[in-house]
Length: 531
Image (cartoon, rainbow, N blue to C red; front, top):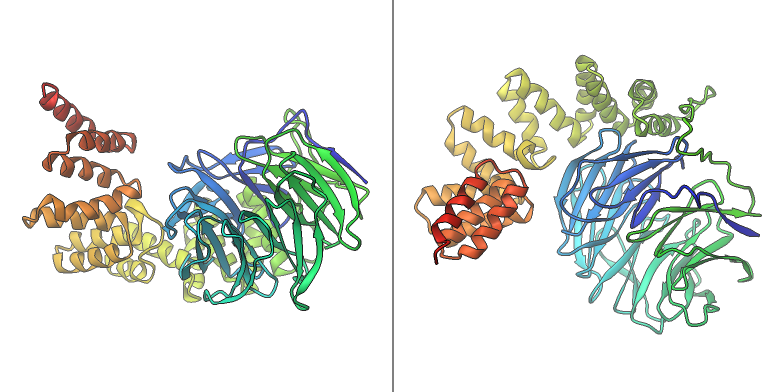
């Protein structure tokens, strides 16, 4: 067996972590200034609008062309790869997101953070199932079993297994170091693996409750990450020595080893090919081919200067799910006209996510009537993205009653100035109905919506409350990088005599694009420059 770097002279984009799409042709990238995608056949790199916080974890959602990403501020992002923008943001964790993973059935997403917390939610709308303290210190990685359990590891020396409701159903504490860096299930779910700074990879047989094998031939090198091959026969490891090694699970034999010579910390195996993507903080993504496995990689990797032909749909029979995956391939390369027929076939077969995505693609193509038809069918099946889309259509058409009905069903969909709460508040204000506006503000505050938080802070100020009373709500909005929240923090800090803090907040508001923050900063600096 031999390992060969496929792109030594044409390194990929930089990414801390990567994830293969379901069809294996695109890598989702966790990177700065925002999550991105790398389409390997054409070498096309697509970046979303810059995000203010570092994005360090990523996975693909079951909806075609959508990523889930985790940020340093504890946020979970829904990212549309073909629209190249964040379409939903929820703040669910108290620290930097270290790992995020979507369940095999596509229904749930798990994420953990450096404060030890584990979040479990729904992929459809990021509704929270549970948030629990999973580890003391840092929770480093999450992994799903085929049966729907989620495993976590952390800096307290433990691997723990949880149900989707947050019930602990297992714990392993046999590593000799408190730092366990990664955890993963074998493709058949029979083995639960973990690697650690104790220089071992341990494979636990889930059903028989015993260790199947312990890989301990790593001399003095810590193990950063490991990954199972899709067929379950091989294991790849990445160590502190910056070498990738391939092991046979049947007898533990070392089959190949290659020094990659880069600061790498993360591995992921291609879903169909003997190909491994290597990534790490501040490094270019590398692709490592495993020669001598069951098949050799056939994924095309033309030079950047060569234009590859666009992927063509398989003319043969396809299942609805395969049509959805084919649409994914066209969407990430921005071929929306080619994607739409596949989405409609999958939608007609009853896939609700395909109905909603067909509505979004039709809207982007300017086919408003078709978009409304598909969003209506998806909304009837309970899809929140389509409920919100129908509310937008009604709002633009001037039908505030219908818009309010749809937004009320998905008030937390998206964030910022165009969230459901923001539009519901705006509708009530346009009607001259302050009582309903206050009700939506209160609900939005409870849901941590930044527009509602800003509105509530302003209400308190207008009603004569002190800056100390309004400031906590402005601070919550500011923590979400909302321009008005940052601006209000500057104003409240000035009123409280905290001039240096006021200046800092106003500078942040300027960076976030607040229209009057610069004028207020100039005023304060001029007023206090003498003393």
